[in-house]
Length: 148
Image (cartoon, rainbow, N blue to C red; front, side, top):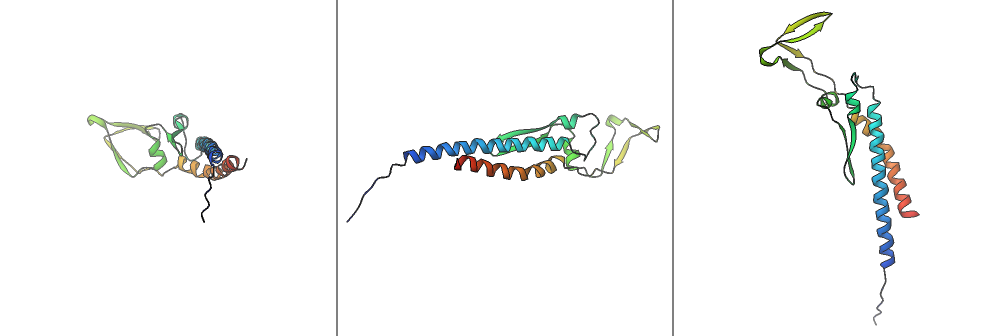
């Protein structure tokens, strides 16, 4: 004996699609809010002095796709502050001189040995601090999308 039956899943499929779209929207919003929170944290850091304000004002969150937001600091020197530098030689261009003050006295030299700088990972630290909140936001988005 065989029993045949047909199940109409049209309503279920429609409801699931609606809930998945809502989940995508809510998680995207959660990610954007977390990224903005990270940028605020990075701007408030005390890891470095920003005399001109350019580095702090150049920090932003850039959405790359649904699940990825990139934190950026768009200055030519941001990576040197964030990642640090190794010891290196700085030489004057075109055979000229480097001029700077040492102890209130001006000096001119053709090259100097820079000792390097310590990394000050302001973006990474800010992202790490914001990630705990992302977990809670994703859990909330899941609850709202699938249990309401």
